[in-house]
Length: 485
Ligand code: GLN
Image 1 (cartoon, helix red, strand yellow):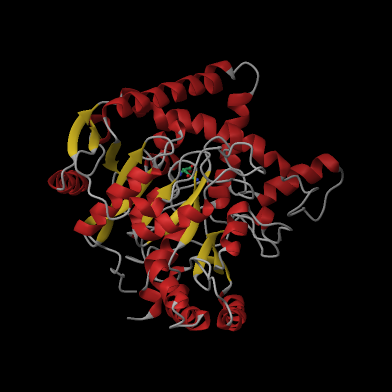
Image 2 (cartoon, helix red, strand yellow):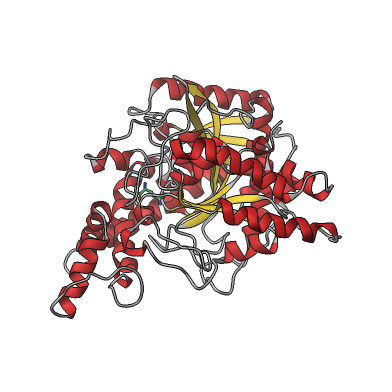
């Protein structure tokens, strides 16, 4: 089997046993990248030449190395809103097009300590606002399963890269579904950890109370390996939680007898494609055959999640994006008569339409007179959503839902209709609102396009998600399914 088809774990074992060299691995990915990347466009910044260079250095180091770190010489792609020292970090925005951060995000520091090799910075919807990568200021990424369709978003570049075999794994960020939705559309595994599990230091802020960094992989084992590396309290991020990090690999290969799985009625209603519904409910039955217990539950306030999210996320975004003023860093307009005009022209030319829409929505809901009616009300709804989850978790261990109401849509299909675009996150946003972990795993195909199954866990219980997801992938394994490109 070609090296680019292998999982992180398989690659890491080949390196640890010194059967292959890091440069052989990176060369295999370089060849694959050359073949398919021009059709997919997953990278804003393709770093494969740099990766080949780094791999050669690692070849030499490996000769005399005794203890070899987990990811030594193994490639990983990184979403382009995660800060990488001396490597351009654009957020797929014109305003940061030439921004080169002087520091690494904590997750990058951790990957470096583990010897990983960065292969590229992946495309996203500008500042992670969107569900298709069509909001990227640079270009649209294509879905490897059908080049006329979107890969999902906002982490569409990361999902497409892993699905196409351009990288064995990638990091993304998820504010309302941006890891799980593209993972579902591209037929790979995407985990959004509990809010606070992974440091956000160096993740360019969109909506700080919702943003979380997570993983894209082909196997659940690789999810566990990456989670072991990136999780944990970080003094540089006061919202990272001081909670013990278990060894997530200990949850692999376990049986799931007696695990209670909640099926919330509100997630199987009108708007959900009937074929997706069947595939997802059949997947639940497969888990039942393995000894899990299915329990019907109700989570009545989750139906307000989209509305509340589109008040809270833009409010936080309008505040976070105030820093792009042409003074501190990033783009500055070339001609202006005074400071005021410099600010407004910079922001007008630097931000795309969706980002501007969110800034306006957010500024409106935070303004005096509207704050109580919109922002405060949305926060109250958020508390009710959280309570819905906590009530459910008194009865069940995890919750099972579809990840998306339908498969990947066509490029251009929803660009002119932001409300339709927002609805593609209808099953994922409540998870961010509650701050709990969620994973999307491939569970079937509809008309040749992948379908995702979402499992939602108790706070800081990614372990049970990994356990059940791993069991499921033993029943239905899509890890070696690569699209014809
Ligand atoms: N699609 C959602 C939005 O546009 C979620 C994006 C995300 O999770 N970053 O806000």
